[in-house]
Length: 497
Ligand SMILES: NC(=O)C1=CN([C@@H]2O[C@H](COP(=O)(O)OP(=O)(O)OC[C@H]3O[C@@H](n4cnc5c(N)ncnc54)[C@H](OP(=O)(O)O)[C@@H]3O)[C@@H](O)[C@H]2O)C=CC1
Ligand SMILES: O=C(O)CCCC(=O)O
Image (cartoon, rainbow, N blue to C red):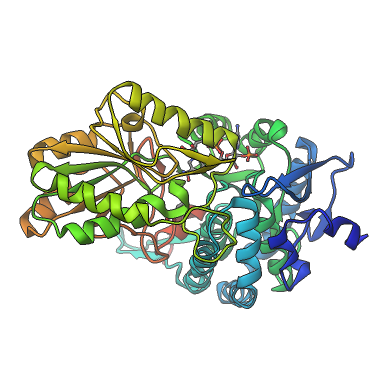
């Protein structure tokens, strides 16, 4: 049976050492399940369009049953001593660490990112598990000085309850661990719905969670098809037994989920789209700015919500920055992510590719110059692209590009740069390069973004609060604040003391 299925695996999956990690069933209540109606959905390698394997197309009622399992598991898990929960998370961390190369290969096969980035994401994703394994022990409450004789006031933190976690395809591992680890540490049980394009990284995590001893029903992974996504999302957002929903993805879907969650007043965390400005001032170290720009823009072929989206460059260094940027991207290697040396893989699917193509065309139609690239090489592989003479009416200025395209704008003054940078409905990450300490404070404070990189293009880590303002979302992930998203405060007023 196995050899029959194996024939259709992509090459990257064939090379994994621990074949147990490649699960093709959903994981509910400690069991690996198929859909009751037997229906499956194929998953393709975006680099080759080869079928990697299949996943069950669970229906709404099966997702509802997974929520029931999480509800049943909640009392015991939430009452466990935090240190014991932390120890199980630590086991999970260790197992992920032991299997990191296989996990990276599965990730590259299903989402296309270069293997070197997949390896980095496994380490990054695992850092959230390690961090929250520790934080489980640090959910401190408060004792509030009394205002009346004979009374004492206490505040304790308790887990919010069953948590639904809906995650995207661009970070198939880290977006799960950044939600599941604080949820489990706080004492919540979870139902995870991974993106239909990238379910195997999620199922591999579930396999290792099971091996780590995380009890049945505590962590569930439900898979389905794009056709049923809206129905399943609605079930997760409206089922009264779910008390928390955390979503990473587009602002469009975030708005739908937030409105659906209002029917049962769930606690909601949303990590949505961005339109990150990357500002280079005249006083910047231009070489450092180019290095930061490449790291920020071309990570995951530009498919990252914190990717630089608009490059605002002050007139005095515009030519120098543009020339050096162009040279740097001309050296980037595009190809199948599982080949050594590749820095830019394919976009996730045809829709993503069409979106990038139409944004480049729109910019050209409105007068932008292609300074480098601009071509679709094959399938969904795009050349790293640099656009000059970009104006604010172009789609690349207004929308999240989610592809390897860098638009350059020239500005004259600091005020103008801040005004352009803030002229958007979203506010996730913003970046700027300057060596003037006064400007560093002024601009960092003036930018309407949840996260700011100053002389730095990569800002994410497990100890810092990740999240946005405006339509980029609600809540913070990672850091000491991340666990609060899965906790509720209880005030206890003690009389007769
Ligand atoms: N903030 C971020 O990290 C991300 C931002 N985006 C932005 O969104 C654009 C479009 O990408 P796309 O993949 O379509 O983004 P979506 O927001 O549609 O997809 C992301 C996740 O949301 C799920 N989803 C989609 N519709 C619903 C729904 N009605 N209810 C519940 N869950 C739902 C998807 O599931 P399924 O896979 O089953 O469809 C997937 O798990 C990108 O170009 C980018 O700009 C996209 C992904 C991540
Ligand atoms: O939403 C995303 O695009 C994933 C976040 C990437 C990061 O953690 O840096």
